[in-house]
Image (tube, rainbow, N blue to C red; front, side, top):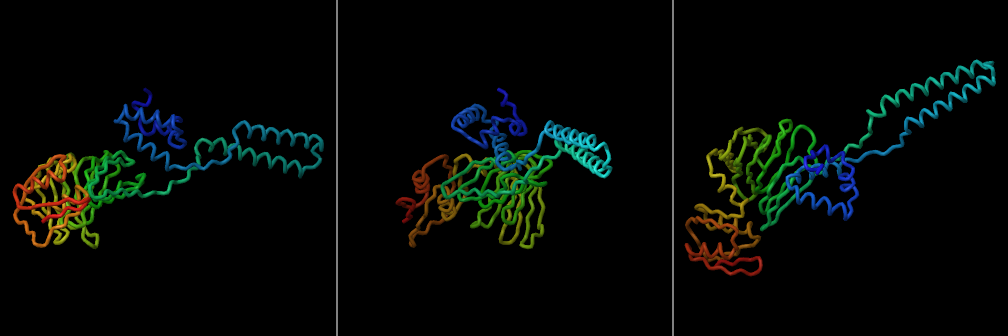
Length: 343
């Protein structure tokens, strides 16, 4: 019960939790896996705490305790008194040296008591960059160290530091991803995707930036998003603010910008396992299907399919999608392994 309302700082100070992260055993794994299954709302907090513990390395140096230092000090004073008595203070230079030594030791002890609770040597963690990728036909859900949740679409990649440091939280995206950013007013979250830089404090939105597509787009589900367009010289071309149900499209070719209202459910259809085509060409469709199902399309030379297609397929097989397209065109297909032949 005590873990139910734990924050990150609480987990960092819990010996049992720390021992699980640094020295995992089968019993500990079973306990924490069961606990997380019963408390899924704590998954982001636990992930963040685990990352922090794993990346902090402490220097373990010998530090005598207070009692040992006092015993040593008293022993030196006792020996000094005996020497003084035995010599009956005849040797003044020896007396001066002993007193000087006692003063130096006393200063050292005073410094120790003053600093022992305030000076804790910590070895600074080296920043580690993590790269996550998806292949064709794959999607990935992941949590960052700050609690931000990301859903990565097929054939996409994202780079981010294992632990965010400094005044910003910056990630680099290629492809498409949905972000549910953990709020932090002190540290803006920045997504760099080719020529666009998206900055938020805490909100949810979609970014699409594939290398083989001319347009980069940002669409907002909740909150506010600031989007900057940057040219090859890193100069800001435009600066826009987006609110829910707004999208900004940027042309990599001519640097044109279009801001418009959108149906955000349609933009996020991919996240809900839905393929949505609206007046799409056959070339656009097979590119999307290739990415979605992890297949390669081979279209015979004599095949020419014109016109635009509209359709919606939720969690359907490739065969069903192709059959659906076949109702409005003359396409025929054959699937062999991961290759689809159109003839």
